Image 1 (cartoon, rainbow, N blue to C red):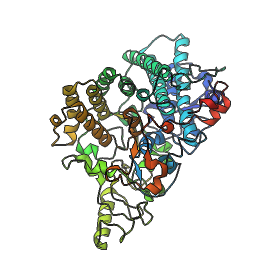
Image 2 (image 1 turned 90 degrees about the vertical axis):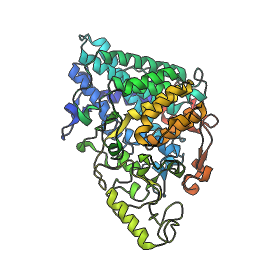
Image 3 (image 1 turned 45 degrees about the vertical axis):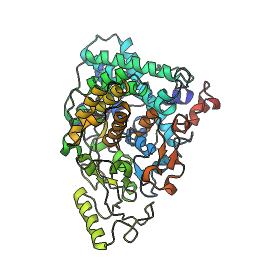
Image 4 (image 1 turned 45 degrees about the horizontal axis):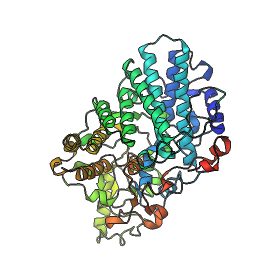
Length: 547
């Protein structure tokens, strides 16, 4: 692989791979195992795997050497998708961890930025550890057992997930480019020195490898033990349902509609849709019935002011939230039917309490929604009481309370959800609609939306065009804040226009060049820059390989 990654990966092999005890429930510092012993037993292989689980939500330097405190991996990567797409809107000029810079498109478009470097670095570290397990199991001579297959299935799934993330960020979208010739990312199969530096493989080669890995993962899982344990901690482990879910995402992103639909159905079978109370509870726990996969963050290893909820929730007690409440696109919120309970999490009439609000309407006297200060103050107090915050938190019209801390107003850790059955219904509906199977696409969409909207009538969306527009609306609403905006817009080849149709509520002064962005097929700024350090170190890459 590349020389920079060579050094990082070599270091990772000799760095203790950290894990938690059974089901990640203990509150003591994690155990450690040396690379020399990593493949000595199935128990040790499980410790390697547990280290990768933990690496999804830990600050990168605590698990993988050479990382940086500025990113806690998927705590950042998950909401980043909606931050980039303009779904998760900043209401004020507060900055931390490059979160505003990310929203302004001044982060992923810079080859020396922390985001471009650490996303690349984190995903390749996952690939290294997956390779270590895959290669080690193949060469170990261990008797095949259900437990060994379960570990192997997770390793293949992790490698597929990491490559899908890399190719969707550092290469042109499959459906809008020429995958056979478009440069993707380097393929790495090594797990020990010497590493072989590689040039960028094509997007098609990467997609083919992902498909192969997912097939191998599903085969291994079919002969595995299934998840061990129960509750929120168990869902930190990957299983056959996660493999099917990632295959559904992979197939959807490349227009393999039949595989996408079938895989989505397979992934969601054991995860019933949430009811209204659960949907409104804050998306802070893997215990929710429809969560297929998520990280269970234990108190001893919280990331505090590096967490998903610090960046995206309006109840986390941090300056990024208190000074800059996150709002939703008012065009989306205004289109939610009154009969749809999801609309309850968006507070249209929240008073604009921040005198430094980006829209210039902060503070009583500037907020056009309130002409009586007592009414302004009373509404603020009412929202504080309902959502567990105080006057140290600013409010803003169209602010959200979809993502809420289990203990609002604190910095306590919460789980990070990666995959839900709702997403799988939406994938099935989109895939079937794209195959012109309108009746079955309607059935898939209706199964989800009837749970959310008591008056939903799918029959009115009876053409491919109207049904796809409704599927897009439902996807934006159902998955809002969960990070799918960036890859959705690339797949749909949609631009960003905060000014259109009455405006999103975002400030042009704050959003700068990101206020209006051309669609991905004509604007290569959607593609993340290859880290410059990578180009400097890899003899098979040069400045001409830069996106």
